[in-house]
Length: 119
Image (cartoon, rainbow, N blue to C red; front, side):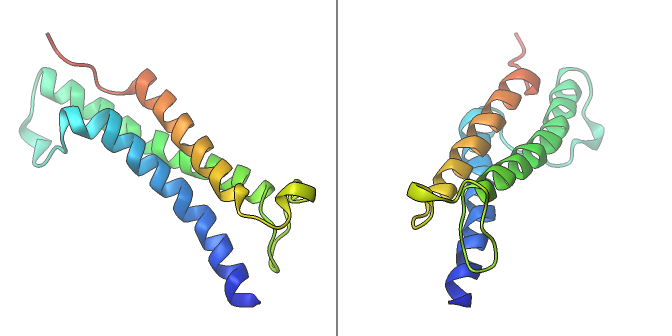
């Protein structure tokens, strides 16, 4: 039905978002928190905030990549990905693949460009 197809496609985007959110909380926000009112920050705090702002683009790239990969393995009435055949045609493993790709990519990018603890 159309509702199931819509919810399946919605699940692809939400799974990628959730993976980025969990990886961000686990790797970055748990240690550094969220910065509020950082306009007056200087020195080490300013460098940390600059690196956190670069993570926003890493999150968007990770989310978009995860959605694209997830759609390749997702089959629905609206969309049939090229790899949504055989084993992937009648299940939601595309959403799991989407989740894993987004989370892994964001964790990798966060490790490379994320904030580091100041000594």
